Image 1 (cartoon, helix red, strand yellow):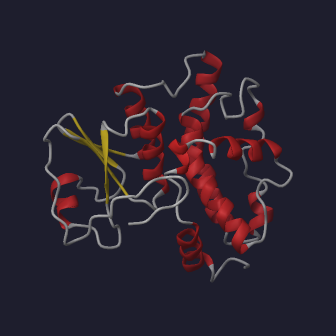
Image 2 (tube, rainbow, N blue to C red):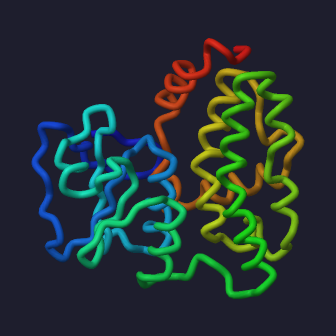
Amino acid sequence: MATFGAQGVRPPPLTSSSDQPPLFDGTTRLYTSYGCPYAQRVWITRNYKGLQDKIHLVPINLQDRPAWYKEKVYPENKVPSLEHNGKVLGESLDLIKYVDVNFEGTPLFPTDPAKKEFGEQLISHVDTFTRDLFVSLKGDAVQEASKRDIQNALGKFDDGPFLLGQLSLVDIAYIPFVERFQIVFAELFKHDITEGRPKIAIWLKELNKSDAYTETKVDPQEVIDLFKERFLASAKI
């Protein structure tokens, strides 16, 4: 059982030899993977809303995933997925909104029209943002990544350090990927992504004050190993 950051002991991931948990027995389950940034989004949302006792984590080993997961739970055979009210739903950006709307706890998306509009724009852009950062690793990573950051977006609202001022689903959508790129750039490119970006530095500092986020953080060595495997041949490391 692994532990990283401030969280307690994590249950071990289920493998091809693991029994399937009961399906549609009234328990809400988040099928996840500790190393998956998409699944991390939903895990963070669950934690910020205080739903640790309402949404149970079911970690899956993606390298040795159980056959029953695809056959009986989620035919897409990926994480995250959420078992709730007799159905299984997927897609991380849809799920963070679903959890926010359908469960108790502090709302994580603003009602203010200007913030709501900007938040929706940022969420619609997040896939492009992450894809461009991945592409940057194949060239001059530091130079290319400098063209793609959220420094300017962090300055739009002045009532807090987060992307919409106060913490929201927008921060949750971005942070798993920024977390990983911070590790990669520091370890492989010897570059601090917060250098010259004070608002990003404050954003990360504030996020790291909350156990709701820190208990979901990935093992840095796993990130480094994965990025070396995928990009070492083409990136200038």
